[in-house]
Length: 299
Image 1 (tube, one colour):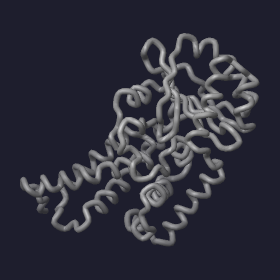
Image 2 (image 1 turned 30 degrees about the horizontal axis):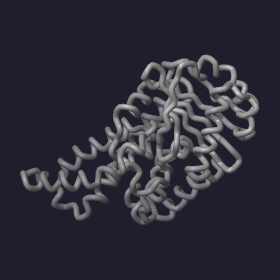
Image 3 (image 1 turned 60 degrees about the horizontal axis):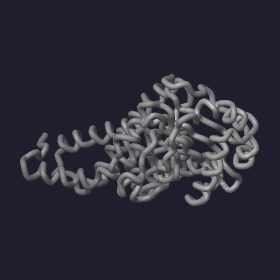
Image 4 (image 1 turned 90 degrees about the horizontal axis):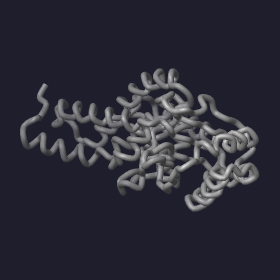
């Protein structure tokens, strides 16, 4: 099969792929919740693009989105097995969306860390359908072609994903309100202020700590305002001693990077509604932290 890899066509292929790559990464990352796995998918899509008879491709962007989506769905099967054996709660890879103006540039939907976390409970095809529709505004007809299913089934896939998210998550507050809640929470947590914590947390708040089995972190989620507040107060003297906090942006939302001796120790992210803080997400896994700090992703 002719692959069209003469000098001119390869140069054109490179231009087409470079133009599409931000969207390709965005699709793969949202489906997988992992920046590393998304980069692998994009790389594999590039290899397939090079070895395709590109003379037969009328819409390169559509072709590349299809290849990327299917690769991400396939990879998610093995990823799910790995996460089932993950030590403690698994949280999606955090992205520094302030590091590059292209990050999340098309639409912010399905980028929030809490949304990615909740989407993980769906099967990969449902996640892909939701991401393509909500984050990138593909038509149901286009999504059906990508997923090799009917348009009616595509609508059902997206509907199930929407219902899952709406049942699991309340409407988030604005970015400014999010930061104000996080500021109050941070001050109370640092000071071991039990009453201050209880005032900002919802009754059914859940705290997740992703340490990846490397750092000392709770290996089970902590549920409820009373338990979470007492838990935070108990470890406050040890955890916050001689630390520095820096306001950052994680997946489009204000967050806090906590460092000790100049080294990242944790990323503190929350999910907040008009009731207060619904979820607390501590990213302590050194691999995820180091990637966040040292490798801003330009997609």
